[in-house]
Structures are given as C-alpha cells and as structure tokens.
Length: 259
Image (cartoon, rainbow, N blue to C red; front, side, top):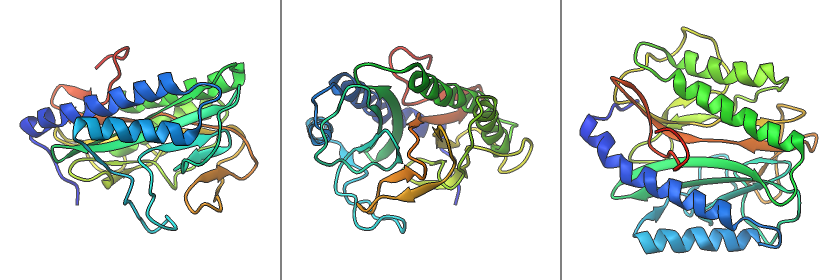
C-alpha cells in the first residue's frame, strides 16, 4: 500500500534524514587506503548508538537475502553493485566504493547512498559516479505533483542511456516511511506519463545504480552482495525525497547540496 504523509509527518522525518546524511559524510571521510570495511561498519554502528537510533539493516532478511544482513552498512567495492556485505577487506588505492546506509530515528526511516574512489581516481570511475549523481538529480527534478512515477524513471534512464550505459530495473528506489522498503517501486528506467500519479505527501528513495559494461548481476557466495556478471565497476547514488505541493524536498541532502 502506498502511504501519503502529512506536512507535519514530513517535518518529523527531517531529523532522521539529517542523521543519515551526517553518517554518510563521516563514513566518506573515513574511507581511506588501509581502512577495513569492518572498521567502516563499526563506525556506523557507533554513530547509531551515540544518536539513540536503530539500524534498518542488521536484522533485515528479505526473500533475496540468504540470511539476516547482520551489519549496519552496505559497502560495495568495485564490481559489487548493491547490498555489499562488509567483510574483512582493506581498501586499496583506486577502489571504487559505494556506501549505502539507512536508519530509524524516532520511528521514522531515511535511506541514502553515495560512491567515491579511495585514493587515486581514474577519469572513468569519476564519470561513472557523476552519471549516477546526474541521474539522481534528474529523477528528483521529475518528482513533482502532477507527474507520474514513469517520469521519474524515464528521467533517470535517459541520463544513463546518454552515457552509453545499460540499466538494470530489478532493484531501484522504493517507498520510505515507518519502514525502509515500501511501495512504490521506483525503477531506474521507464516511460514518461506512465505509472503512479505523484502527489504531495509521497516519500520515497530514488537510487540510480549503474555498471560500466552490463546490466546483469549475480549474487556473491556471501548470500547478499550483488556483483556485475562481467566484473565491471559500479556506482550508486541515493536520496530520500518527499514530494510537497511546492516540489521535491531532499530529506537526506548533505551540506554541499541544495535542499
């Protein structure tokens, strides 16, 4: 069921959006050559405890997961596209790292993701990250009353296709509110003027993720991490967005971004 939030409820979601943003910023600054993925997960866990928040991931066990996730952060490195389960891996110079984090604070949830290159970055990796960020911005711009979900999906897909990338629509954005994953599903490609009519009060995560050489994925033996079938690198950007009568509001905006 798709739920619409009142203006007061959207205001009540701002603190968790700000918290998720702050955690991702801290994790980005901590992601350096020589840092272990388990250290990043431990940092996220400490920040959750210090804030009195709750993890959305640690006991999460959907049908596509082999077991409860068991960590509080997704760390997807290089050919890992989504749902990267933190493990004993030390970051190396040039690694492309995606960080995906969601938390519950005061009964409300926010979800966000970013990608970065650790140490020395190639132009190709930086452009892949930039494409996901441009696609996210395009999707957010289309998230206005009177449009349809297909307009959001089409805007995301157009950016990817212009960059010569293929788009996987198995996983995408989703409703956010009292729980991390709800209706509606937000594919990263679609057709304009189709799908659910966008109305004030709708809160959902928009999350473009693209791989350089393919749109096909497989599940790692860890039971969670999704990897590109051809070993190509992947990037991921995500924000939780509320639709208001005046347009979209980015609840997880980081300090340097327009809110």
